[in-house]
Image (cartoon, chains in turn orange, red):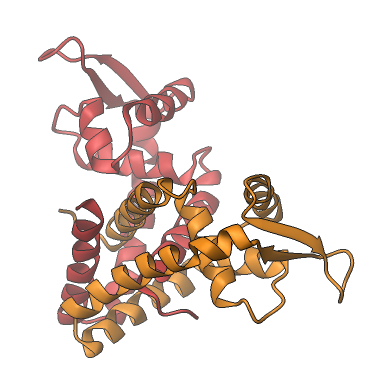
Length: 140
Length: 140
């Protein structure tokens, strides 16, 4: 297998997407929608605006709008004008999505546990540092 | 920034894509097309079939077909029936793409050099091992 860092990251992200899509399908979700439920579920005590989602997923407004509209259509989220700023949409998980939260989080936590079982905390710290370095370099 | 491995990988891949797209634009390419020129350019002594590209990029046949048709339309590749198997398409860089090979490879080599300057070979070995572990886990 290649050891060019960019190629490996790209492949790791693609394979992760495919595995998440395959798991998510049984719940009528895509992998990205599953990530969204995970993100919103872990921040259920906060007001989450669409712009927070754009920042978290590093996606454009139009992409976020399409994603959230699809999720609203499938009954996983509702969007309403934010109390703080009526021009901004607040995004809230529905009961249907809250019911899936446990399956979503257990998948993500389980994947994380596997890598943490295979690599020591010191090794994981190096890996995370390298990924963050790459993120910073590519944002320059 | 999050330290969930999957979230970091996804973000690193997204930011890498965006940076590659931005660089590629000046040559009339997308980041993915640039990766394709890099892949084909480094294998210019081999016969590369469409199925090799599908395997390398881990993409479906239909996705590869659309990508290669676009590149053919823009004059970066030609596709012809393979001598070994007429049902398979061989993919060859055009002179126009060969002229860009140097810009493409220097970008990719330069990104790789940056991460290798910031992390020791021992650290890079751990990082690569973790990415390969993730790829294997997500292919199970």
